[in-house]
View 1 (cartoon, rainbow, N blue to C red):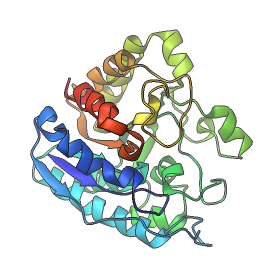
View 2: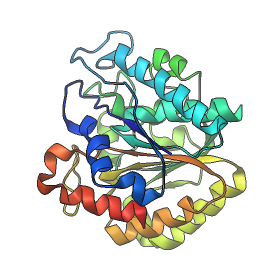
View 3: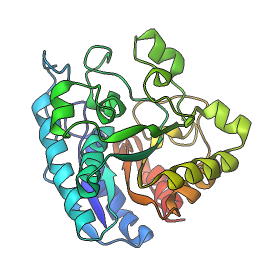
Length: 286
């Protein structure tokens, strides 16, 4: 089943909060062979940073997490495999929390993203919740957000961070680095993916996660190179191509241990004619 999460953690209308409606109109639920549950009644509004959490629109971020958490838990309890159509990466802590609630224990995570997303309320330069979901999942993000998710939701040794290209920038901004937190062999930036072979890396990643137990898959479209997918907000060179993405995701999507998935950071406002959206729907359907 698909669940729309129309949020953008910049705190204003537009942007990625339009993605669920646009991708639904382009046929994403049908391409996935999924029943569409429509959108959750969530929005993130406000451009002031909360002094306690460091988040823009903190109250809305926490409320969104609570609503996503309940929706994912209910979906899994009903025997469904939820696919969240975001929206931005602020959806991830709620998704993992709901899956953890349904399982009774934390789970693994395949985080396919151009960014590490390990900022917190102090190190994030923007205060956008989309900077911080992995920190929240590991229990080290803003305390109120971790509490809204019911504590840590991902197992560090089973958290795979794949496709990132922001290492230098994150170090410059004082973000805690993944080696200090994850202590996992499942760290692979875009350059390393290509050096090792994307297909081989995807197969190894899927095998490791599957052997360890249930996991969640999160895809941020900015893992793709800016030249082929400009319809996202934080563009970087050196990303993956469409063929790379296909061979990386295929073994993860085929895994018996995959509980659910989430998609984030497509911005229809930056996609005249919706060509990027059409290509994304085709890729995910394939």
